[in-house]
Image 1 (cartoon, chains in turn yellow, blue, brown, red):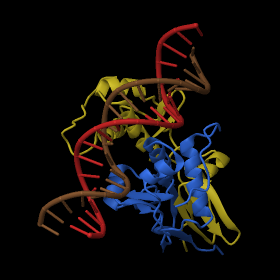
Image 2: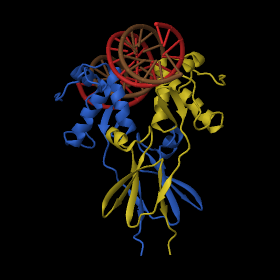
Image 3: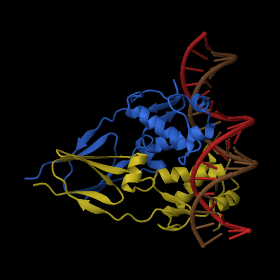
Image 4: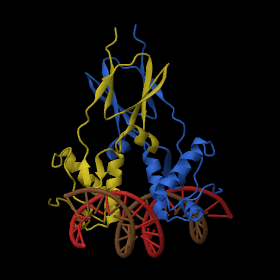
Length: 139
Length: 139
DNA sequence: TTCGATTTGTTCGTATGTATG
DNA sequence: CCATACATACGAACAAATCGA
């Protein structure tokens, strides 16, 4: 893994955002693909001459936006979503982030919002990486 | 601001999650209402005998799940959402977190997912705190 | 307006724990 | 047992923004 860009501490943009930008760009360019492992926090510290705090802060933001997932053995580019479809009728749909408790109970990944489908029968909460709402073409 | 609960460092649950739990509960119980200001990081450090790092970690998680918003003058319980409705036809709807760039461009708040409405004309990206999808009752 | 206090933002360092290979 | 890698948590310092006197 070679370092293409450096962190410019003279810029207004903080170092952790610059690192997050670099990783987002590598994903956008296909240099990193879904499922690929990122360099370890230690390697990024060394490679970009940053503290572990700064690297972890970049990762935290990327996790919060669902770009990467982090586990005990490293961080990975989020895999492709694989969604089932539901076709509700007479409903209002919106989205929000799940609470910690919901994430545990529904096994929702890092940075994954939920779709909330409200009908007369109540609310249904669907993880957005596994569900999509199909709306039939009208008349 | 009176401290109701203490952090128990002997528990499995890490201190920052315990603090986040306390704040979530205060919101759930109505002790903190939407728009209310949270104690400053410094006050929480003192009140619960935690480092600033730990308090900030709790806040970061609460921000990521959209429970609070933080600005230069403090953190606040997220205000009530005020949504307009759209009624697409022949569409697939899902949700995801916006990138940093999208958050800037569309003025999306912290911890707010976007609804993605895909039709023949392309994708439409709607902040979920301002938009909901209404689906008419079918026959 | 100027100044000082408050509050969050950013970044470094260090240490220990847990899990895996 | 050792090395790797992430999780948690302490401390410290300075910058930037805001607000009220």
